[in-house]
Image 1 (cartoon, one colour):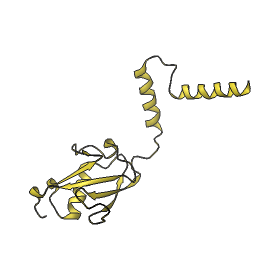
Image 2 (cartoon, rainbow, N blue to C red):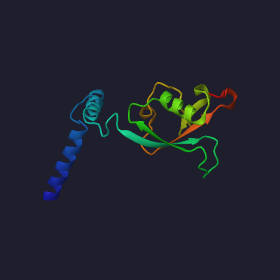
Image 3 (cartoon, one colour):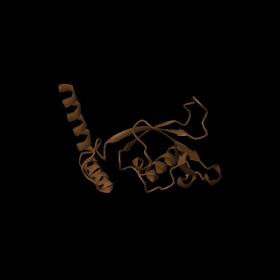
Image 4 (tube, one colour):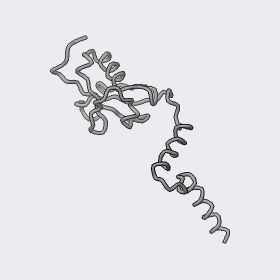
Length: 134
């Protein structure tokens, strides 16, 4: 009987966390988002490491691989492209970023908007037609 009551208490805690007593699903989602934003797991400006690799690089090769540290929730795609272009010596218009087979095309979005987390690998692609030395 005590195990059943502990299980019931645990179930109530889970339901309270997801606001199951609120009938409107939209309001439930908003409450979960409010809670998450009021106490984020990571600070927006916390440094996060990631690896940048050339899109057309050889498997297992470390040529062109860069360690990169970005600010969680703040660093935009355009900032990363600018840094990569400076490091490899090409124009910013020749560089694009790719993660999980998807081009990170909206340059004003942050890396976290695209789902990039700490220790992820993001590939950079250089359009050789657009390359002009800096």
